[in-house]
Image (cartoon, rainbow, N blue to C red):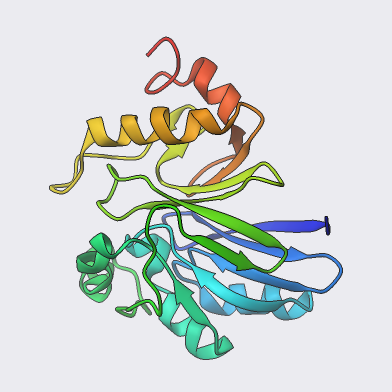
Length: 215
């Protein structure tokens, strides 16, 4: 199994964790949730000699997806994800960016929508796709079962979960997504989330006040 390198680049004033993952040997990799500050993302990729093969989106919120179209055009790669139920968000990124005072946003249509159970071979990873609605209708989580790593977007945080107070949010669905789809994967899985520090499923299952065993 090749060595996986991981870097988190907080982007936009919303401090969203854009993640770059790549093979330390071949330099092949991918970008997850380029929400903005595309010149910073490109500079990191170039400085580290990384060949980006795909852009992945966990969901359609502006801080996760607003830079995806610009990065796609710059790198000449495809955008994969999220589930098509987030199309309405991706179609309105420019409008939503204006509401937050964010510049440079572009509406985007992925090259490929994802569904529960899809698998993606990207960079050094083989990722399984889980549809985990609640924060948004089309939110997906990417799991590298071999490396025991998950990219969970805004489904789960260290000590918290994603917001569900949007008109399309669903608190019960989000809790079910975590408990029924993530916890069974194993306590040893480490995860990178959309905001804040990483954690493990085991730590959150034991202590998270929203979805832990004592919630």
